Image 1 (spheres, rainbow over the protein chains, first blue to last red):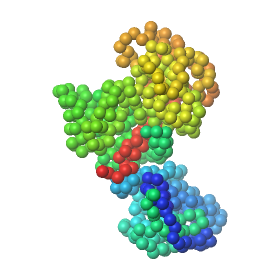
Image 2 (image 1 turned 180 degrees about the vertical axis):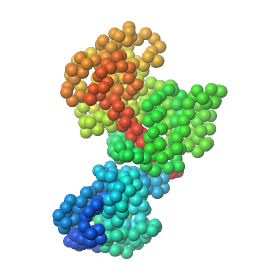
Image 3 (image 1 turned 45 degrees about the horizontal axis):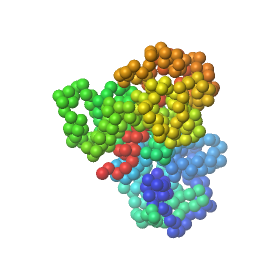
Image 4 (image 1 turned 60 degrees about the vertical axis):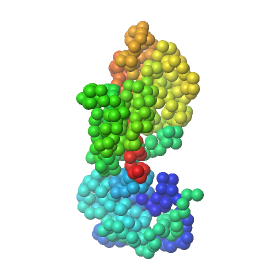
Length: 190
Length: 296
């Protein structure tokens, strides 16, 4: 789930306030293009590759990656989105609520899935996503693409494709938008 | 629960409809939670629907039915509830023939209590699934004209539906013979009519209520045949409806009484759709109660 959503939407409380910009729109565009090239290189083309964005922050990023991939290779990459709320391991510990409906219009069996998210932090969202993918078939392989890896992993999970490695404090918030990436703090609701 | 609360349940229900459509319709969201259904009154769809909803969320379910329990030995409702709670239960799904029982039970126990129908009073999850079913077909209830037809007096479904439909902006007309209206309609934001034929041409939704033969203690109708003649939804009456009007019924249906046998099976009849959506709505209710808040 997006850092911004977790920080700013009503069930989670608090308001994000930006302190400094770490990527601008151009940086973001170049990172998306580079990741797209890396995906093609790693998989020797796009045969059997599908993109799945994690709700909600990974979905717009997944869409941009798909556009970039189709420019590079001239083929459409099947894309979907997945909401992992019902697979989280912190249900009952903090407020959890589905943010959007999962949209995976294909059987994943035998495909190479590239999971896309905006920020990689503890790794728990990705763990939930790996669990959720099982409900849709058995992929040949799962790879992970993120725009920002901010460290502080709590599980043995690592990304395959990274836009930017960004050392952060545990209590900071990283906000990825279409036009840039900000780091800041969460303020409690008024 | 206001209009906002209903919208929230419906938004979350979208996710659970998607879960229900999967090849393996099960998520681990409520692993380790226990849901007990406590039914002091018979039921097919509501009890099974709650049970299926709980199972699809990976919760454990237990069933209590009066005929095989210590209630037969005279154990009181309060003692029964507290005994079940002491076993470590997270939610009680309660149906009872007396109004207010779920509310009373909630004051005795610390776990969540869900009203699955209390007497003539309310049936909230039915209203939620009805709202969801209409929204699913029409996008919204705002401005829709909904005719609620039949035994309103004995119907908890009618009470909950009227509340929910009007809260979401629908215009509700109650159609019933005067003997089957509640003693007072003061405070109900509805129109009342006893002429079904004049209401049908303007209705977006016809919501038929079940003729509740088991609650008819006095002679309120000359005969069922006479009721069908004036208020039954026959093929002829369906033709009076606008082309896109929907037909709904909470079930169980009395074919040939409030609805003609072939009308129940028309494409515009959403009766089985209501049942399917019922599972998803109850998943949403269970998850919102047990999963979306930190455990106390």
